[in-house]
Image (cartoon, rainbow, N blue to C red; front, top):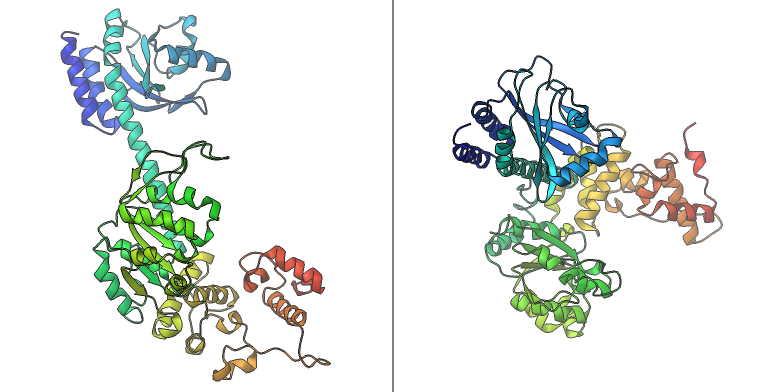
Length: 520
């Protein structure tokens, strides 16, 4: 064990050279075994939640005859001793046949029969692992071994810390990929970079404007009816911008209670109001460096519009209850289905905020004005629905496609997606049941001019049916289609697009018996 400084330098070099602990300890183990005349070196990780000590890497002069144990369990009666020893940072020596070193015997694999030194590895002020050096039964460890091991602990802790950081990054990466896959499945898109459906047809002019503005940081204001796909266009602007690696944050301004708008947008400091138990970042901070999509911007109260205007002007704001001015670099994309110029004239939307947002307006046409996109959208939603419900592939016949093309789609793309999902659930064969999803009667299917216009049924003894009669009839139809199911993706509540509890309450009021529709 000559020149310990040279040994320390070599160990440090290998600890910093590798990110995988297996690679660093393979090199460090060889160095220690030769320079310290050891028979083996082990690194073990401590799992305090399960009181498990697990071997993550080993190095031997000669591989032991017995199989190495992956982990050791520490019984509860030794838990206190384990924690007490780890907190002390003491290096303990285990010699054969010394019962006083019982804890050391538990921490050692059963195949270590000779002298062994065990030292805790402490990272970020907490013990996370152990390093064990040992010799065989014919030799002994001497005080110099303990001194050199103590000098090497910092380097070994660095190697363990690199390992832990790599594992954390791996877990975060897997979680992010799982979230990404889940979102892509949810939206029916295999890849984030997929083109917008209709980009070469009904949305050609829109995408030309998107291409013009994406490369700049200019605010964009998207006008479009509810369900027309404003968020899809906002995401396309973000994906084609230099900020595409930074966050895209969507905020529905109409869904935020007025008393919480400041806290949601700008964050708050701990104790700034009742219930503020911790400091919280607002949406602007979370979107820093990226794009903030303010959906339904016309729903913001006037007081919130004033504070929003200041952030748009210089990027500065304070959290609720804070005194420190914060700065963010955020690209704003806003959207609305409302008539903002009219709201400006009515003084329900600030004129200065309007001029700040409407630098580059984009008008998104409703689906009824771009019917050429319906076939591609319908096929897209069909694939999405079959994947979501785990069903075989479905086809859309020419007759069914004609029904889709003839409909006026007041709910736009969102309504089309819902109809396709419903048709997928209701279909019994390889083709979608579009007519059933739209609630068409047989006579209506044969009349193209009235293809999707429902008429009230006739009732004997009444010139015009009451609302309860219409509701009763409609609920019975839904129960018949769903075979008496009320909840779930195949239930009547989903067909009627209402809460199952609401449906049950109406059924009780109208005296509707769902049981008679259940198969025997």
